[in-house]
Length: 335
Ligand SMILES: Nc1ncnc2c1ncn2[C@@H]1O[C@H](COP(=O)(O)OP(=O)(O)O)[C@@H](O)[C@H]1O
Ligand SMILES: [Mg+2]
Image: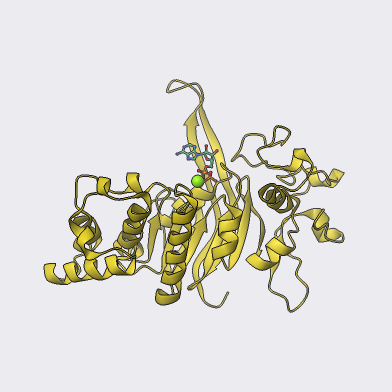
């Protein structure tokens, strides 16, 4: 990609946990499996997949909140070196986050104006007067009256709290926002208002976004390109329009069918009792990760790990799919 804002190369990630409590054996649980991905300047990239597939882990890696293997470059700056977290102030100015629960993200003891001024204070930007002016302008930008400056978190509705979180994230004029389930805790109409706010900010500021959600409709509404994740791997990647109208990977088809409530084999519908999804988050070392629940698997699917390969016709925008069947046979679409 010529104008890439985020370049992710071979990103892998594992958590160390202990089976049976603190005295148990240490278990290394792989979560992300060699993810290679680019997000363009000013692009809204959606990441979808069932709960536990690793979406938040990918977002947190980009934010520099957890260690990982591989390389992440954001607007030319390297995120970490040799497995050591290195979240510099320069990087913090380029990438900011909006999380699911705005109530938990905001300090309840401080007034909203103080909270929104905090990033500017930490980065030593402007005089007190200039900072207050910026806070007023940002409140206006996110659709709140400057009078909200003196209120505290408990005096705001869920949507207003999320607007404050978005305002805080934008104070340093970042190039990328990682929005992790940012509208999932809001009711439908408030969620729609926040989505429209994201879109306005994207148009007016040229903001790039990694929009993480399990809600496919929301992602389709707001995103230019999407990545479908299953057990720590991107299984399909392409323009939102193309992936939604012609889902090629059996898992994408299953996700879309589950979202639209259409009649599909229950073995394939994520969340249904028959859906074979062993140890969410774990990926298997051999073969395709989706081999167990896939109704169209062939014997070699369990042996050969498919690569992400572009199946779009020449001249069309790329649609990359990680499936041996799709790559070797006529795409099995819309079954
Ligand atoms: N801090 C952690 N320690 C151990 N395991 C974790 C931790 N955070 C997440 N996991 C595990 O990693 C997997 C992926 O989690 P996550 O990235 O939050 O998925 P998603 O956001 O797609 O629901 C899950 O199986 C989860 O239990
Ligand atoms: Mg998550």
